Image (cartoon, rainbow, N blue to C red):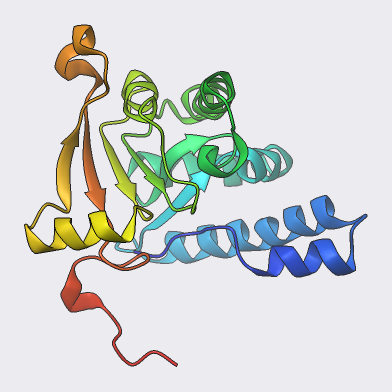
Length: 203
């Protein structure tokens, strides 16, 4: 599934163009979103997944109404999907409980008001991992499943051994019951699942 994610080039942009990072990042995403929408509109079988709303909302606000209507139809048909849907990636930019809530609220508010859309799936790909508060916050924002990249190596090994890469993640708040649980999936290797999709000939 084609998807977007923060790219390594950001570090170089910040190093060589420290005063232009925001505008260069927006320019990059402007080009990405334009190319994606053009591609999706040519083939109803194509799909694309995006993870945050910050750059998308800025771009969307500057395009013409005809193009906005096209994008709404792509979202309604499921060709353009948003996962997590926060203003930014919460696992890379939100150090506190309150920050995660505000981040999800801002992004979900934009998606709801613009497309009548609520993300049902989230992912967490950063090395920082997740706290026990994550399933509660995610589930209370309408998210039903969470895909995770980083766990301790020993835990990944055990989960692979006992075929427990998928699990129900319940927060440590017993009074919330099943309404606060998420279906969790641990990526087998970076962004790839299952094992037969792995590229074994790495450079």
